Image 1: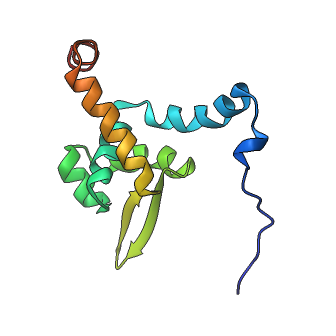
Image 2 (image 1 turned 180 degrees about the horizontal axis):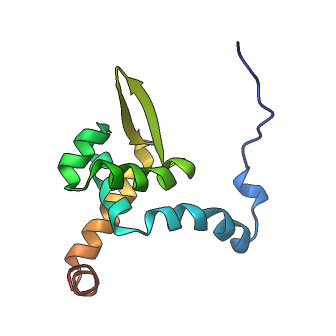
Image 3 (image 1 turned 45 degrees about the horizontal axis):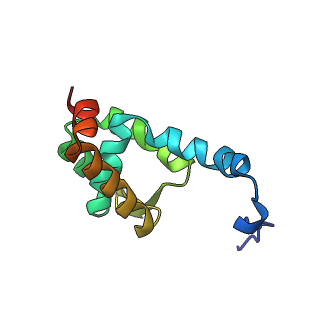
Length: 119
């Protein structure tokens, strides 16, 4: 059974105010602001993974990985695809992977970023 939802995509031109754009972007940036979540996003930027694969790659418990995936799912940054008895997690779109990788590289390579990241 198919159910059509009355959903309208936002037209960026309608968001003339930087305050409106900031209000929409803030929850997504908040979801990315945790180091563990950002770690998971960077792993998913390499390609889709199961929770087990994320657990092994991140060195976190399954419970912690699932806990941190929840806000990323809620903000639409991560998608889930069932595969057998597992779920495969992926970034919502390839367009997210590039900026996240770039920010991580800048943070690690600049003196200010290295001080902020590695202290």
